[in-house]
Length: 118
Image 1 (cartoon, helix red, strand yellow):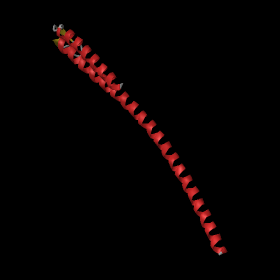
Image 2 (spheres, rainbow, N blue to C red):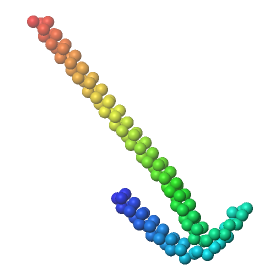
Image 3 (cartoon, rainbow, N blue to C red):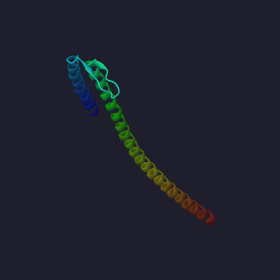
Image 4 (cartoon, helix red, strand yellow):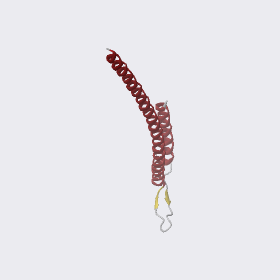
């Protein structure tokens, strides 16, 4: 299921990238970009490509941090469940050991009482 979702995202991303690329190639006129202190003139294609790259980088950075949070949350849940299961297993084993020790004591007492009767 997750593999299909990733494939869908990849195909959708490639389609959007192709549309953007066509748009960029159609817009090659020089434009002035205002950075406040200076206004360089550069072809619109360069501006658009740079903005697409910056947008992709920002999306990737934001997407990665969210995924890490989800993964860490999932791992924490799994660790808690495993710890609970481990503690339950230990408690069950301790109870079984106590029962077996009691059984050994009972059998030893029974054996001692029989040997003293002889």
